[in-house]
Structures are given as C-alpha cells and as structure tokens.
Amino acid sequence: MDDTWQAVQQGGKTLQEVLASSELDGRNFSEWISDELAARGLKKNLVVRRSRLNQTFAYQIMAGMRNPSRDKLVQLCFGMKLNETEACELLERGGVAPLRPYNRRDVVVAFCLNRGLEISACDDLLWSLGETTFTDMHRGKRL
Image (cartoon, rainbow, N blue to C red; front, side, top):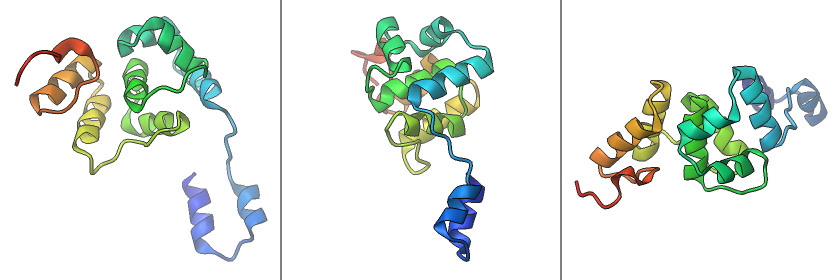
C-alpha cells in the first residue's frame, strides 16, 4: 500500500498506471475477517470468548450482518490478538476510524494490543486512567 501512495505522490504516472501497479484488495469486511482467522489458525469461538462480546452479536459482526460500534470492533481486535497496525485495518474495513496516536484512549489500546494483553488488562489500565472501558467490569466502581 505504501508503494501506491508513493506512486500517487511522485507524479509522472497516469492514474491508469498507478491503478495498474497498485495491489488493490476488494474483499469486504466479512471476507477479510474469514481470511484472517484462517491465516492465523483461529477459531471463531475462541476469538469471541477473548473479545468478551456477546456471542450472537460477535458472529453477526464477523458475518457482515451488523454494523458494530468502534468499541465493539476494538474488542474483536483483542479477540484476534491483533497489533495496532492490524487493528487499524480491521477498524477501517469495519467502517470506523483507525486508532489515532493523538488520542489518549487509543494510545492505551495500541499499547495493550502490541503487548498481547487481554481486554480485561486493557480495561484495568483505561479505568485507572479515568478512560472509558470496553466491558462492564468497572461499571459502578469509582476511581
């Protein structure tokens, strides 16, 4: 993908030449998820369990039958044990904003993803910093 951006920025090539040299990926969200799970040898039920999403809702997300919130997609990233670059791709393919390095909560999420932490550990860090958590584990508790 970086090569495509370089070709666009350099100029000197026509649009047709840039498109012809680009590695375009036309997979939709559910195709991409399915391919990623297969490539990583992951079972859906394990991903769902690790994500702490409602099982039915998670399966509907992965099948492309639901338009989940960004937080639900982030939970799926934890379930798949993605790093921040892979998580950004999942989020963008899911139709939401990728993780942003200037957003405090996103930095915490990226930190946790890159270190392979579980979503519960991420929630602990978020809660300790006064940020919104992903699961219910800290609801009703005060800082």
